[in-house]
Length: 385
Image (cartoon, rainbow, N blue to C red; front, side, top):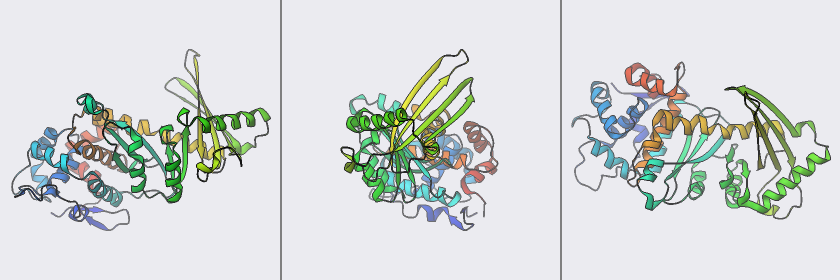
């Protein structure tokens, strides 16, 4: 049987066409026993279905050999875990990512004007096993509204996410999108890159930009003291969950026309303050204040929505990767392995969270995919040809 992905526009896209331009890192190493297509498709299917390491991928493939044999070349059997390890350690992460994102795009249409939350996550176990090289950081662009991977880049060894951000932004379609970044991404060249590529931005400001932080703080304090804010410049939300009452108040003001250094921050229009007050059951209260810059108009309700969307990346992506995919425990360190396995997990999560009528936690959905070929097919291929 020839397996095909049903695109969001109704057309069929074959698996072979998705991966046809993926360079095989073994092409100069003599005879290739297992086709690259077989290896990467088995790995993705197994990752969706609950496999979190090479041994589990092989075990799943052996259990589902008849099913895989319907659309993959298994002439030489199931590849060994050593084969998977070698291939993923040498596979080009950007080329592999492009293929996987084409698969996701065929299944699920991305929303226009999307909010793109960008944040980094350290591969802790890999870092602990190689202390001399420093942290390995995977920086992800995530569509907050529909929980979809848009791009991922691994930071250079020993660096934080800042080393990967320019390359990641270059990979993304930014026209009409709103990019959100934490304070580490508050850099003049990154702001310029976003604007030049047609995007908008909401970026946290902290002490790494001391002069800018002071201007933002002083401008907002003066506006609040003057008591002349328009209704559109403030917005408050209240939410009760997990036994806590959380109130968020967002204040947005126009950036001054002539503050020192304004020319360094391309297209800057707004300064934003978000005050987050949390009260527990026993009436203990904590207050946090964060500041942001943006080239959106100073409309507090919209800016509140954007800031909140960035915060959700922790629960909808990072938390899920650790709890449902055991990413923190993954020990892969060789060359490109962590980046390639990281994008596999993020694509699998995108597919799982966007599959219609699939209920339960992410972990339970993975189990269902492992138990039921019908569920696995719904996640991976949409309508089956």
